Image (tube, rainbow, N blue to C red):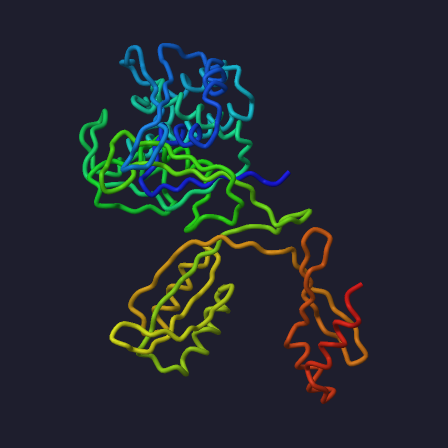
Length: 394
């Protein structure tokens, strides 16, 4: 079976009820979700859903209706007991614990108190428990194995909390989103809540664009406000990730660093590229571009592992004339690769072998080896390469 993935498009932020609404809109069975939620030892609430319009877009609004609001917040041991005594599957229990633990850890950092002393007020309430576990149940019902998310719109302005009026994003929200791309917008509302931040940052990998997928379902989860200038919805794409192979290539993430330069001696680029590669850059390349006012320039792009970004940025600022850099995170897929030495009648040449599963898809002789053999034998590089490929890899 192909891998089922979910992509949360957070252009209008994300909250717990928006997550649940998007899943129901995408086909998660609300009746199954309600029945599974009954396995949690909490009472005094009802779960409703209805179709609404948000800036003309049809979406599903899910609400947790509380019979009476609790006065006291819950500690970690209270939440842990609720989860442990539930009859949910062990996998969903552990995922729920992970999300709530991150909520408690975030609050502990913000308030400078021990983890065990923290009370969650709004975040420890029945509606938060229902939103989190309802989302986990919905994802499980749709057989989602991997979760991705776009950069997250936080909104702007002020928000009322149990700790008073705070600027958007609330401290708990931004603490939970450390490492995830976020941005403020001109919408004077809190678009992303701590619950939504906890859900997506606990299991979702950030992507600048939609991952390669075959979309099967689309859902829209409605936020509370109907904003005229933007559909206040969380868009959810559910689909298959497949290359049609017995074993998919591995996937990881890289950081792209870009800068446009129009005032540097082009002779310097060779040295800059060498230094970037020596410092860990996966690839560096140049493109001719035309900037404003018709000025010709060079776009210098560096592909890097996230851990190497700091040193590469330092090189770029020190060695070039740029005064600004752009960053974005990108997903990449790579086939399984290995290097073997091939013995030919002309000499030994290393060959890079690429595979999908057990199937060899590409053989690429190392250029430096081809050049060395060519200089030694006085034969054209292309003739040596043909011999390498003819001999093949055993």
